[in-house]
Amino acid sequence: MSWSEEATGRLNEAGFRAGAARRQVIELLEGERCAVTALEIDRRLPAVGRASVYRTLEQLEQLGLINRVDVGGEVAAFERNDPGGHHHHMVCVRCGRLVPFEDPGLEREIHRVGEGADFEVVSHDVLLRGVCPRCGEAG
Amino acid sequence: MSWSEEATGRLNEAGFRAGAARRQVIELLEGERCAVTALEIDRRLPAVGRASVYRTLEQLEQLGLINRVDVGGEVAAFERNDPGGHHHHMVCVRCGRLVPFEDPGLEREIHRVGEGADFEVVSHDVLLRGVCPRCGEAG
DNA sequence: ATCTGTGCAAATAGTTTGCATCCTC
DNA sequence: GAGGATGCAAACTATTTGCACAGAT
Image 1 (cartoon, rainbow over the protein chains, first blue to last red):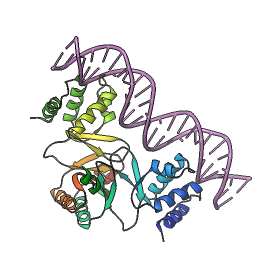
Image 2 (cartoon, rainbow over the protein chains, first blue to last red; image 1 turned 180 degrees about the vertical axis):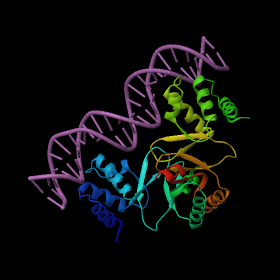
Image 3 (cartoon, each protein chain N blue to C red; image 1 turned 90 degrees about the horizontal axis):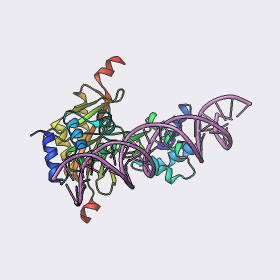
């Protein structure tokens, strides 16, 4: 079952009705490998109102179907929560490009830290900032 | 040499003149162990214009004297960049409380990941989300 | 005296809300 | 037919910019 089918199903179960705006947002997210901002979604879906984009993203986030990614505080970006596809991000400080990566060793270490903490940790984020290959060879 | 002295000195070297607004912002940051938002600084320094708060934070960040901390995308928070005091944050998903922690093992692992990456990594952030002890016993 | 730093207020950017209408169930 | 879903526009919040003036060098 694809992520968009999963998402649609869960929205139904949660009592939401089917609507054109939400379907388009979900389809767009289905086609993206990494995070997209709300405004980019709005730009790419001219038929969908901005408010609907934000409302849909909020609903999807609350159902745990997408994750919010913070890469600099300016704007929020969102990406599919792909079960088993847990990953983190590197962001290029020059061009802003966002590149996903996974690392089991890093995950283990983060879980170890979480076990030893006072907090009951439920999720985590790692962000590496640096210069991407493309920008590195140029400058 | 205290952080505020260091900061003032470096601002001088960088060609900035001494001004009351910047001095107050620096003194406030000196007294904080962890991140503070721009609006909180503005609130606590009624004599300082909001624009000056943002301008000072921008200058300090560019000189590497403070670090921006993203804990949820809404607002940006800032804290002193204390040499040797590198740390990360846990944020309580219920009350928003921000608690710093350090972990050498985690740092090692992150550096290892950085070495193996295509990016030339210059900095990193780790954020653990969870329920703090105070909120955990209540709920 | 010069030129930077500052405060105020207006402008901007991202996000949220109110509401009339459309469409699903 | 009833009630949620949507688009538009206005409201709101955080941040940035323009500008006249005060203050540092």
